[in-house]
Image 1 (cartoon, protein in one colour):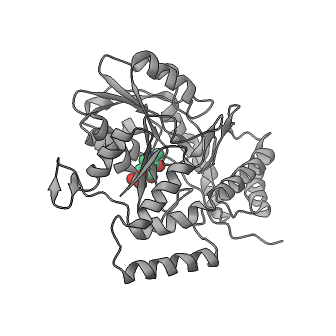
Image 2 (image 1 turned 135 degrees about the vertical axis):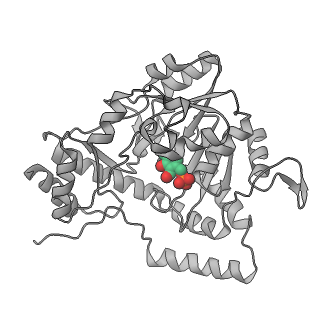
Image 3 (image 1 turned 60 degrees about the horizontal axis):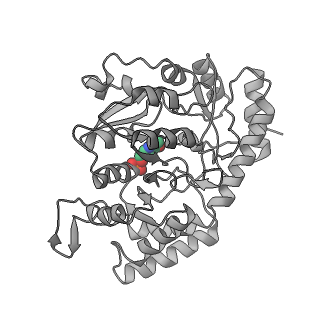
Length: 367
Ligand SMILES: Cc1ncc(COP(=O)(O)O)c(C=O)c1O
């Protein structure tokens, strides 16, 4: 068989689903229901139920979801929020926008996830919250972090932007912390047809507050209780997301099967693979391996037509935009720095076939 054309990700839905979305969109347009209509409410109810939380608030982006969680909980100036350096910048910018100070810790090289003993060492009297990231659709070590938080009276906020449907001992990502931020950026496991995000929580007071924050701080039209912002999930996106949510478990199941094919083919290779702890149900938003010759390997795969990604090439404390920020001064996080140099994301989406995965793995094994 000749070479297959492999995509890095695939955002398609079935023709049937697409038709349903267009039908509902037409109906929406016919009654001008664009902002915070029944579609948003229905999606919020479904997603809250899916995430095992009492509330879900649709907002403009995943960044906003984290920002409103902090603002709603009164985390801001003078507070420190501990998070990990090997993440997307969207984890850290909301901390800064909230007026708080990020405190970066390293990842555990065995799991690529935030290291709880480093979190413990970083706690100070100013620490207000811990913000773990379920990176690549794999669970952060929530038991240890929740224990630490309880011991020190801290809030845990989950960055679940990459982990729709992941679970730990039956508990869904987004249900374990005080509040969580999800992103519906199109390439996410649950992605819209544009930007979108959601905050999940079982705290009714917070939910009420964020409901207002995202809508100009108003309690009723043109009556503003406090200075909010405009950060609402579009009704059109809610239609897409509600339709796609019906398939999320199946898509995540497919991702786990695809991951198992990669694990099987690459287990004896000199690529480092990352395995789950017992009780973790990951959703493999990305399938990431590491190797010291990452750049060369990526180049070779590119010439073979295999698309790959690097998530992420720069750890948070090394970004140019933070060069003059005190929280990056004299910060050395060797595991995160090494990950940035060595990690490689392989093609991963729910429609990858065994033949395609074999083709990627065979190329890797031949290198
Ligand atoms: C780990 C992580 N945090 C936060 C975000 C921010 O989400 P958004 O792009 O929807 O603002 C993303 C999304 O890309 C992400 O991957």
